[in-house]
Length: 118
Image (cartoon, rainbow, N blue to C red; front, side, top):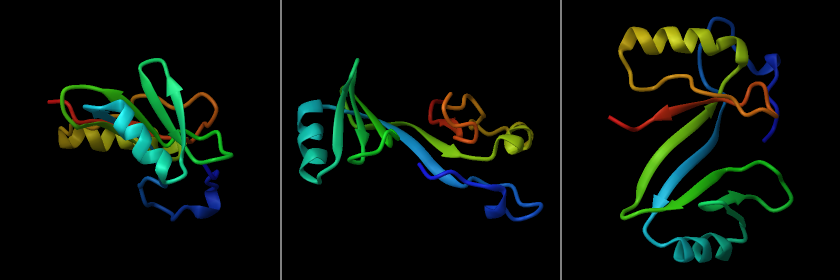
């Protein structure tokens, strides 16, 4: 993923700078793997499914796990590290189900996850 610098920011505007990754559950992992491979994407086996990369890049764009039906598990958005407290405040004030959860260890501004669970 391309790094985002302070020069990309607008003063006094809280927002995400990118989609970091997504997580999906699908009923047939083999079929999903074949589908994404046919587009030329780099499908890598993971401990309980597979991860989706673009060829030649280490960034993981998606994770796929097998389950009874298709389901979006979560989206992770990229945001600047110094905005995380403001995101938490906005989230708490709006009683949203979205909340800052974690950052990837290799990228300090990589993002936060939003939960679709109720």
